[in-house]
Amino acid sequence: MKDISLIVMQLKNRQVQIERKINQLIDQNLDPFPFERLEKGKQLNELIQKILQAIEGDDLILAGMHIKELEIEGLKLDL
Image (tube, rainbow, N blue to C red; front, side):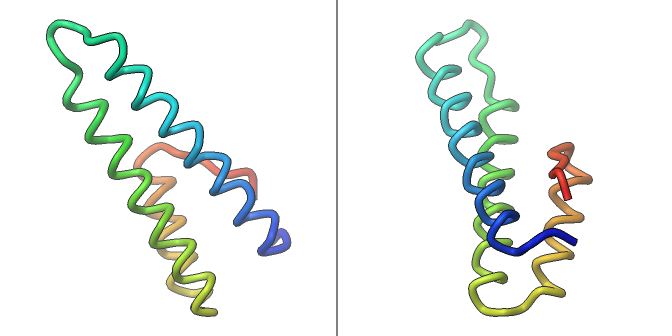
């Protein structure tokens, strides 16, 4: 497994990417509005937050479980 700081940096970069995509979807104001994609982005961000909190709390087992959830949801990390 890579260094924790690299994982944290990668997660934070993914958060920025997700936020940009959400804002881009909102700005495009598509019809019909893409509620499913917006909800998916929010869900991915919540999982990333849980992982970061677990890492900060030194609970690496919980962080690993959340990373697995993230991968199941379709967001692969370069670990």
